[in-house]
Image (cartoon, one colour):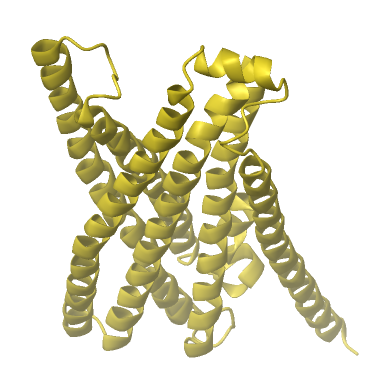
Length: 321
């Protein structure tokens, strides 16, 4: 074999090994993050609301302070907040669904007539995938937050440290699940699009195909940001309105203390904190993560050197991993 042929074979072998290593790292991190999220969820779920700690009757009296109805109030408020948060999110998701379908259709028409129908269709698919992943990220964060609120209260009976650990583990669930779902969906999109853009990552017309493919994938970040806008703005308006209503109705009119459970607006305020500050923040974090990753890939696809290797183009996903 000539030195040129050996160098070519070595380059192909090196590229294949880099691709295998990148895929292993990306999928391995997704599995690992999923396992951590599952383990922390089960750990938080092991805390029973009808059991108030490790100290028996003495701890129970410490929690309820001689008033057994407080334990009932804890569970009742937890159920009200959970049901209210779910009702708000499902209603908001109905409006989001209309927006997602309408905007996806607009992308197909605008990009199809102005650029190519393939670009329009694939951009719309990426947009829908990003929107659904953003919704999932926010819902997971809200669900684990509501689920852990009362349980954190129960663990605080043992110690402040135990309550902090419970809250920290619950918060970690959203972090692990958000990043894992973001990486996994983006990886699936890249692999599926590569089946259509067959000349991507090759020397044959690779520049055009790779660039076009990643420009279509950029819709993934657009979908995440669009849903984040709904979550942050819609949930934020709701929680601020409920907070003002609670203060006016409770403090001013009735003379109640802050967050008095007798005030229905307090429940609405806590619902708003979960759907706005947590579900909205989860969608917002996903949007930022997806946008930065897609932007880096689009820029890298302009390079004649980087666009020839899958592993080079997957570097943003490797960093996320």
